[in-house]
Amino acid sequence: MQMQTLKFVKKTAPPWSIGEVAAPAGTVYRISSDWSRQDTWGMIKSRISGFRMSYTVAPGLYAVGEPTADSDVLVTANYKLTFDIVRRALKGLNAWLLVLDTKSINVWCAAGKGTFGTDELVNRIAAVKLDAVVSHRRLILPQLGAVGVNAAAVQKKTGFRISFGPVEARDITAYIQAGYKKTKDMATMRFPMLDRLILTPMEINPAMKKFPWIAGGILLVFGLQPSGILFSEAWANGLPFLALALVSVLAGALITPALLPFVPSRSFAIKGWIVGVCCLYLSTLYIGVQHPLLLAAAYLLFPALSSYIALQFTGATTFTGMSGVKKELRIGVPLYFTAAGVSLVLVVLFKIREWGLI
Amino acid sequence: MKYLADVTTLQYASDKCTECGRCVEVCPRGVFEMRDKRAAVTDKDKCMECGACGLNCEFGAIYVNAGVGCAAAIINSMITGGPPTCGCDSTAASCCG
Image 1 (cartoon, rainbow over the protein chains, first blue to last red):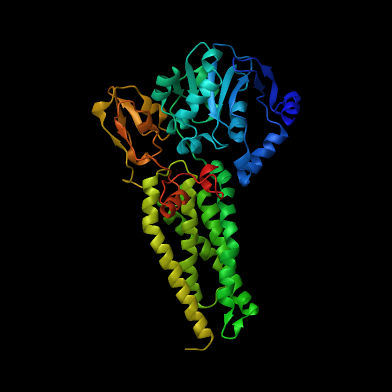
Image 2: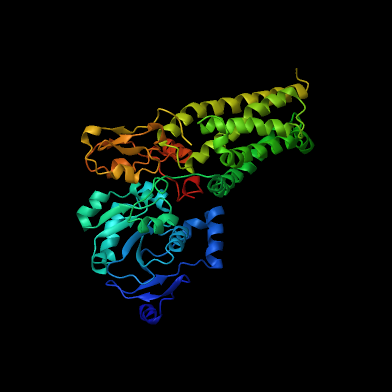
């Protein structure tokens, strides 16, 4: 019964479509190159939250402008933000856009995972009957897709020859106009401050989710008395530590990424540690940590925390490799545990003195 | 910006190079350039082991142990024993912005 009803319901066109174009495997949507307020809001949400995991468009073929059998075929991912950036960059062109099912992940990460990959591309070419859509056998892929797509294998299986275009969608028009040639600039990944800052909310959010645990631990340690847990004690000594912990999180998740090229050392762990020490010093000018034992504990613990969080940013950069991160972790993780352990011992010593046990 | 020196697993055998230029086309870090009808490595330390060159060299001239340079992914793989991949489907890992 339900099947029958569904049959007569007309598929509602997505808001970014501006009509339909007949193609061999059924009609395809013609897409607008302009962003609506909804698109901008979607971009903001996907930059700061888990919303991006479900921000998606249907894989398949789309038309840009008035494409013919001779028009270029560009390939992209089905993460809606990627799709939006690409369609905006294609303004004024007549082309076909083939969207792969990357599970709503951007090209770079999906290629690393293999979902923007050889098999998906080969299958998608067959599913949309691309050999009947265009008379030529050329495909333009984003350069970063090369991590997952073996161009020779695709050509062997489908006959389509792949050109890897520019890294950034905004260079597509210039690349096509130059006769499918890219400058060195178009082929290189940059990582300017704005790009780094855009990525920091996704560093701060997960770190802040763990913050209540850090806070709870600090207050527990400081509140602990021979007679039980005293909240006044927890606040008096614990509060400065809480504030310093917050500063350390921001030093690692926000300030280190923002100042990345200006902080000495190539190691992210050392970069984070340096920024952590500087931020800690500046903070202690305003937040009093009275006892030398506590101050020593703070200097051991908090820069290590900043360092660990800064190391997480390796996942967002455009120039860190697996072997390097492994090396940093191999050296760093034992040091982090040592620093945390020793600073705990110092705080316990402070507590013992406070209780007048020695 | 460059990451740690002397850590990349990139290996290149220039005698197998056929001058197709694919490696220059795919490397987002400018590690390769064409020099005297052969691809040549400009600066190994720029390599981030993404693996695009190794996958796309038809002639087996390039080897790289590809993987993500992402601390969260590598810690995960140490715990689970699997290969380090972006944990995009679990709790907000930073790799997939």
